[in-house]
Length: 62
Image 1 (cartoon, rainbow, N blue to C red):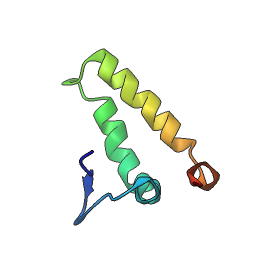
Image 2 (spheres, rainbow, N blue to C red):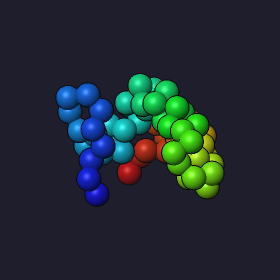
Image 3 (tube, helix red, strand yellow):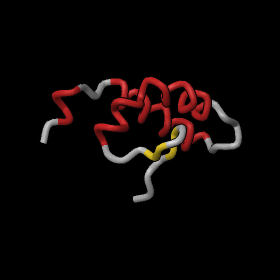
Image 4 (cartoon, rainbow, N blue to C red):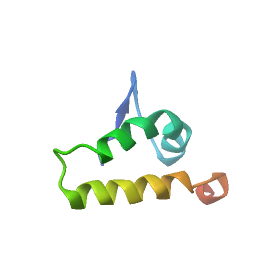
């Protein structure tokens, strides 16, 4: 899977994504309201945002 880019360094793994989520959330929320996406895509992205908001450190243990 291709790493997401946010700033100068690509996201390297799930823990890195979790650490960066607070800075990513706003742009993901804006994207979830973008009319260039289909209604289904916007709804799916909204659910994924809610899911990411509920992930905590205990969920990331191996």
